[in-house]
Amino acid sequence: MDIDFWLERWNSGRTGFHQDHINPYAAYFYGEKGPPLERRKDLKVFVPLCGKSKDLLWLAQNGYQVFGVECSDRAVKSFFEENALSYKHAEKGEYGLYQNDEQVALIEILQGDFFGLEPETLDDVTDIFDRASLVALPPGMRQDYVNKIDALQKPGTRTLLVTLNFDPAEMDGPPFSVTDEEVLDLYSENFTIDKLLSKNVIDEETGLKNRGLTALTESVFKLVKR
Ligand SMILES: C[S@@+](CC[C@H](N)C(=O)[O-])C[C@H]1O[C@@H](n2cnc3c(N)ncnc32)[C@H](O)[C@@H]1O
Image 1 (tube, helix red, strand yellow):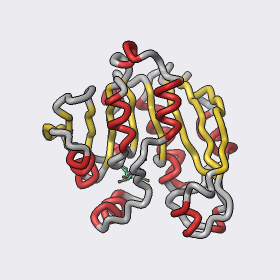
Image 2 (spheres, rainbow, N blue to C red):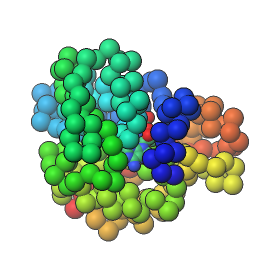
Image 3 (cartoon, rainbow, N blue to C red):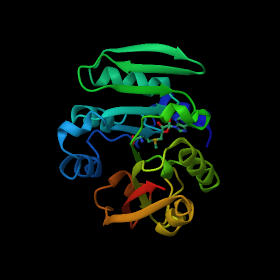
Image 4 (cartoon, rainbow, N blue to C red):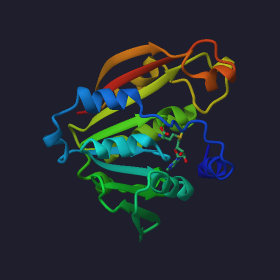
């Protein structure tokens, strides 16, 4: 599941993973349960494999600095254009750097390969929101993804991680099922892990139900880098 796979998905409009609503866990844990508004300007949320997620905009509108990485320039431009945000574009090595013109808090998106990021790229990141990123990757890529994201972050960085659990025999990914046990295997060496909640979402996820799933659970974890 290399970058060409994803570019083809964006170019052919097969982006069923994109949600037009704000992720409810982002809204709850960074909103209602998050720090007071006046403290958020000092917090920078990294959204790996961000697509054109509306969560980027919500986080900025709710006071956080936002930083995403996404391989598809179509996705990145769509994010700014569909949300009527004017933006600047510059070349930064092998990446395109897109930044809004600050109608809301700063939103920066690096367009390029997550796996090529340098550690200093995330220097001022305090938080990471992972929805549909780890679960977008097949089993053979997940350890590399976790090694990379681990190497990029400083001790104390908090991650809100959303995973999906289903019977893999019922549907080919992406998204892929990632069990709670696998989350422990992948992260426990260098992170403290708190499972925040687990929810049966089969009736809400009609797209995945139509692809054959008969049961689907979402789990949300808080990880803190040690
Ligand atoms: C399943 S989508 C999820 C997007 C977003 N997190 C959301 O919630 O809508 C996965 C995204 O990761 C991007 N992607 C996949 N591999 C990547 C890589 N190596 N570097 C940067 N982006 C990548 C894809 O283009 C796609 O937009």
